[in-house]
Each structure stands twice: as structure tokens, then as C-alpha cells.
Length: 347
Ligand code: NAP
Ligand code: ZN
Ligand code: ZN
Image (cartoon, rainbow, N blue to C red; front, side, top):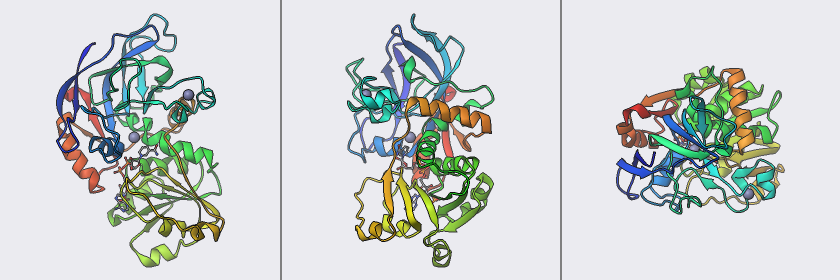
């Protein structure tokens, strides 16, 4: 499928519009996928608008990709035509460094190839993401989706799911852990579902009062409105672990105060402005602040299998491709319940 319909932006300040991109014919190890659904991550918006200073135009975002295999290269073993298949945030890495060998391709020492807006070693151009009709990816970077998961609601697992699952596992969250999930958006709502399924006590930390009912329906045991002084006071020094999913600039020090002694706050939300954290806010209470980037391929498959076993998918608002610019404006207002997913048949 060389010429492929897609949707993308030509600059940081112009809306996404229909365009045509080139996809390669499948190489011996490639899987060609007809994209059925693609989730809309806040990282798409950060990238399209060049907030992280890494955009390459035209920029076709989308890294929560699910669809059906339409062709496979001659050496492909993992997939056949007609299979369900998924692609997340990565489409390539060196496979030789110690991180790649440990299944931590996201931390590849040579730099992994992102699904979009990354220099593409294979084509010589740059990669294009899932806001398109199809994609061709090496089988090592294609994942299986179990039949019991609805394809549309499973799409966000490929980024929002793995980005929250990976730190919860790495920091051994489970029964007896007091977890705070900060921000109830795409990542946050998956964080609530996954932490609850792992047996943790989950508190939603949100700046939007109207989300309390939903937070509890999604699995949170408690809800704290972060603008309400009395509510915040009740959880000072309370949490073992806080997962910060906030996309906008915010004060990390405020949330460090909610950690108990030896508590850890992991930032997955990636606002563009640098933050200031005085050492004293960590020293008193032996607290840690850490980061975590998506997840490697083996862990992404593990997460998809965990979700299939526990019947976990995303709560989605299905949109048409031409509603994407409006969806971005709603993301900026924290107005999504809780992940936009594009129905690619509308492209
Ligand atoms: P999203 O759906 O827009 O959710 C972000 C949430 O942050 C909002 O729903 C809101 O929750 C909260 N928030 C927004 N503005 C706020 C403000 N001014 N003050 C306090 N809270 C605010 O975004 P997402 O797709 O989940 O992505 C979240 C962030 O994670 C983005 O920065 C994205 O780029 C990043 N990300 C990182 C990775 C990684 O590998 N580390 C992977 C994917 C995404 P409430 O209304 O509940 O307060
Ligand atoms: Zn993402
Ligand atoms: Zn590597």
C-alpha cells in the first residue's frame, strides 16, 4: 500500500488536515495492518504543536493503533492475514544493546524509533503514525490482542495502558499499597483501573470536581479534589506511590507533600516547562521523584494479556477523523471521557 490516506499537520500552528503518505511494501519480516481504530494521546497534541521541540512535518500522529493484518512478509511467523494486531509507540530499535536485550526497547541506547515524527532508518524519511488507513511494521514491534477485548476500546491500552502499567509493576504496587493517581484523563483512568486490579488502595487526585463519580466507578476508593484545602490536608503524608499523569505545568512540590516517608512519585505526564524541586522536599522523608517512559515490547504484551484476563479496556469517546481538531481543544480543557478513539473507517 504505497500511497495511504492519512491526517496530519503541516506546521505547529495549523490544524490537522487530510493528506497522503507513503508506506513501504512489506519486507520479509513486516506486517501490513489495515488500521481500524487509533487512540488520541495528549502526546499527539504536544508533538503536533511542537511543544517538545521534536516535531517533523508533515506530522501524522497516532500511537494507539489496532487493526487487521492484510499482508505479511515471507519470513513472518507471529502473524497471518486476518489476525487482529496492534502497534504502540515504537516501531524499531537496535535490538543489540543491553536494554533492547532486556526487553526495554523504549530505553534503547541508540534511541528507539518512535511510531511517528522520528527519523526512519528504513525509508530514510520520518515515521508516520496511526491517523491513517494502514501501517507497515516489523513483526517484532507488532502485538497480539485477545479476542475478548473490543478493538476500539482496546486501542488506548497501547500507550495509556502500558505507560501506567509499567511503573505500577516496576515499583511493585499491589495489595497494601496506597496509590494516588494524579489527573483523570487518558492515562489517569487507565492508572486507576490497573492499580485497582493489582489490589492497591487507589485515590484519585483531580482538579475537576465533576469527575468524582466517574473516578469511583472506574475503581478509585477515594477522591481528593486538589483545589480543596481540607481534602488535601486529609491525605498529607499518606501515599506510598503517586503516579503523576498531568499534561499541563504544575508544582511537583505540592504533591511531594502527600507522600509518606520513603514514598515515590513517578512522573509520566510530560509538561514542556522545567520544574523546580528543592532538595529539602526530598531529604525530609527520604522521598523520591522518578520518571517512566511507556514500556518495552514484552511488557506491553504482558499488559495486553493482563487486561484480557481482567477484562480491562479504556472508556472511550469514538470520534470521526474530521473531529480531531475539536478533540484536541477538548483535551486542553481536561474534557474527555476518558480517551478519544478515531474510527478510521471515517477517513
Ligand atoms: P489527558 O487525557 O489530557 O489527561 C491529562 C489530565 O491532567 C487531565 O484530564 C486533568 O485531569 C489533568 N490536568 C490537566 N491540566 C491540569 C492542570 N492545569 N492542573 C492539574 N491537572 C491538570 O492526557 P493523557 O493523554 O492522559 O496524557 C497525560 C500526559 O502524559 C501528557 O503530558 C502526555 O504527553 C504524557 N504521556 C507520557 C507518556 C510516557 O511515556 N511517560 C506516555 C503517554 C503520555 P483532572 O481533570 O482529573 O485534574
Ligand atoms: Zn501516548
Ligand atoms: Zn537498543
